[in-house]
Image (cartoon, rainbow, N blue to C red; front, side, top):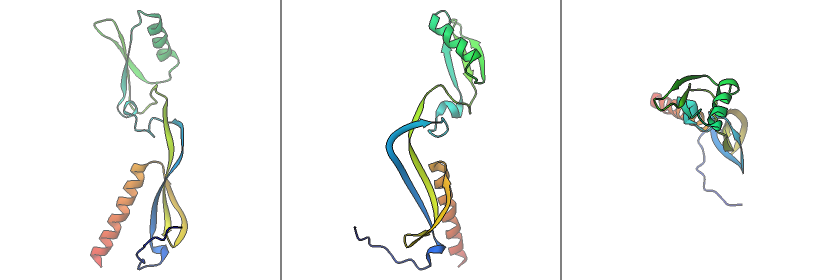
Length: 143
């Protein structure tokens, strides 16, 4: 085991929180649009279909009758059908990701006091860390 040079904390373990990240095995899994930061999910998207072709007719039929998504339909001057999908709904892509975990635990390296929370994504985890760091800075200013 490697010896780590650690600064001895001034307070007991219970006065600290540990922000930890772990990445799962290098195996991809299906992921929701929101998890992977999908632009189509966040802003909506357009799908253009040429209904003069068999494939285009099949795509348009699927979108209209089976996709379950909210959209507006229009036509271009060139005769293409344009489906404009609203944001915050699953896109048509099959997203994949590697499992990640973002934890906040009570205690520090001397004593793990258990899980406080597990964040869904890194943005929330980083925001939590920033808010916690700001609380500490505010307390230090007060004395």
